[in-house]
Length: 184
Image (cartoon, rainbow, N blue to C red; front, side):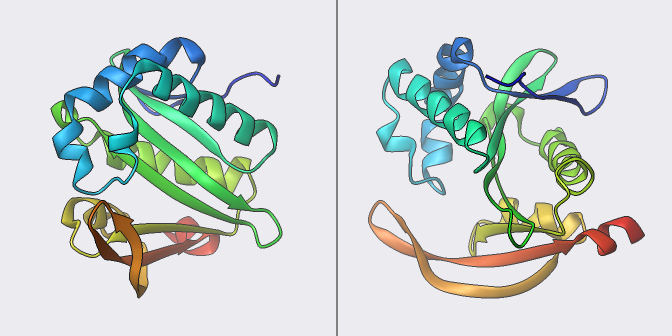
């Protein structure tokens, strides 16, 4: 297996690929924020044990080995607080698709903005991407505020694109091109 990647965001925040040993803490963060996360994330109800979090981590490591995506834990002062990833990477067109979530207890500290900014830099300068997409549910104002704050362009709305337990939600697509990011 390749060496796991670690990105030093600042003196308090580190992005590091999740390891199997992170399963217990990852599950705890999910469980502690279950009601909060469930509003916008379709996988929460399927994560009921540490084994589920371990299976998720194993899946992300397999995805990384196959060069399909890369997932990081967001560590703030050495505490796992959430996850950020290139859920998928289109190598032919050099596009990365970012997804993220943060535990309820760590909201409002600017962690996710700094983490996404670092992941964008990693995507453009280390992975050689030309474009980065972020999709968020139309009504998810917190998630949508992040790409807007970072200067992404809102490029459209996809109707009923995700099933959340008992209803469909629309997604808004945000895009950032490498040359636009470099101008910022």
